Length: 380
Image (cartoon, rainbow, N blue to C red; front, side, top):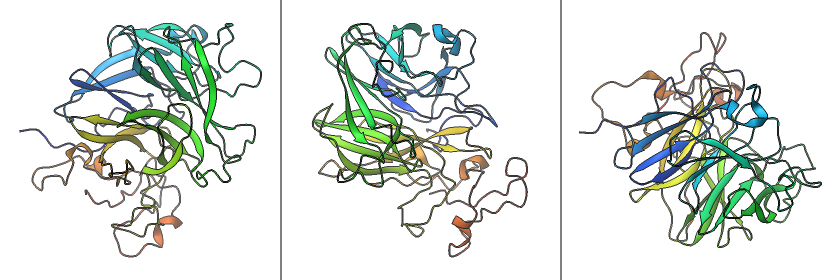
């Protein structure tokens, strides 16, 4: 009998946010950035990979460190952090890892013969003349790469748009040559930022960061973090590089817009940022995302929720739960670790104290990092 799954789905000591799940063979592999316990900065760790058999999402194995900060030639001293990566299998059958270092506007690539082996530095994404993508005059800084390989072409999605920075335009896509690092088309702009969204249908959910791309039934789903930060949204198109329209919210890590157990306009949790993607595993689709713990923005843990698709291809918003890969209520017998039932931190007390009933108490009389009250939480 399988043990029940719950969120966070990895051990309590592991912090892998920005999860990009991919099925290769009979296992699902999750790539992400790497936070630390009681962290003080985003993504200070080396890249690690976790995997599980597709038939059991409770049986996770740590594949170990797959790429070190110092493996990039520009980061020999290890002073820069490895931000959110993605992995794709190239036309040559090898696996390519794309990432951005926190102080550079360019995209780096590493390669490995297996999904979770030791990746080695491969090169920087560049134009045909050798100029690095992100360095040509007029280029937008690169950030949070998401990749999808179709035949001989790999589509590279990037972008970062601050709410108060009118110089940014929106998310971008480039088509790469079979060598996986040479730009043959683009960059083209897809989802607008907050300064360029009027009349586009993206108003209120404009692009912020966290590009991730998936394809289902002939439709391309571009998953991204909106300008609100706490939500993963999606846009849809029949083309990989144009005509994306706003689809909706897949998951919010403060459960905004969910009205099944609270008023829809009220947040349930401390929100923070969000980053993740969707994946099909044995006929069931899931969204992988992260939540914040330990009284800080910088100790984020991965979570999973099952999702569905309507007949028109749209995705109903998933509720953030403790159950995750269990796909239903946790069994009523046995014991569960307390950390699965709370975020351990709340930034804005006023957002919660006005709610009716006693289902939530997020008031901390002392420092949330050292002596926090534990919020009540339905293990739904």
